[in-house]
Amino acid sequence: MRPSNRAPDELRPITLERGVARYAEGSCLVSFGNTKVLCTASLEEKGPPWLRGTGRGWVTAEYSMLPRATHERTRREVNSGKPSGRTQEIQRLIGRSLRAVVNLPAIGERQIVLDCDVIQADGGTRTASITGAWVALHECFAWMQNRSIISINPLREPVAAISCGIYQGQPVLDLDYAEDSAAETDANFVITGSGGIVEVQGTAEGKPFSEDEFLSLLRLAKEGVAQLVELQKKAVA
Image (cartoon, rainbow, N blue to C red; front, side, top):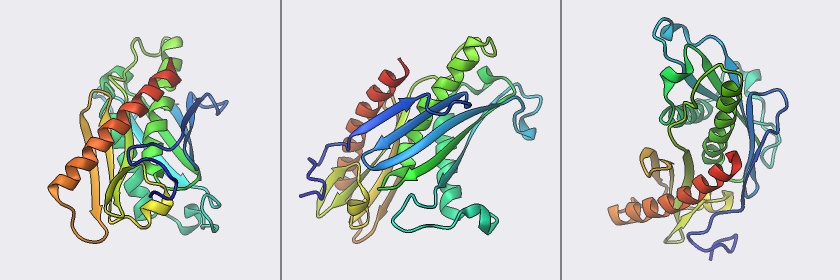
């Protein structure tokens, strides 16, 4: 039995609330159960220096966890002088995931920065960030279209992410912290609306997992992402 009493293939309650940050070109407050992340999209008129003259734009991300997002206060990373290795890994993952579904030349030589700030953490903060950041990015591109900055929406399709794991010998979808901290295997899947796989991160915490177990997690992830994509489409409709 899962601690949350959910079925093995059941997501936590998911909400995607648009337009929550007044000054951002795009924003979304995403909730995966008790995990809550504020995602904002900011337009910068200049792209990275290394793309100058190419006619291509860029999408990048920054990720952070507020001091009381967890049970005990964590120190702000700005006070340590640089982001931790975990933070750098997550923000690069978010950026890669969004760029996979963006027509970068359609942006022009501009940059969109996605800020994902974890307000409350209960497992799956990176997957929630990717799912909510897509909505914020969609809203930013719509804002740009309405002002004739771009002529088409550069997003090719949705992209979302979900965690899966093997908990007490059973493959389960969308791990919360209680499950994630005790899982024998945990994995994160980034998948597009058409079913394309952008990235897979999988780790055996106890014994190695088998190919059959991996395929069972992939099946769960595809089912979960299909539900998330429908919620994304409703959020931006």
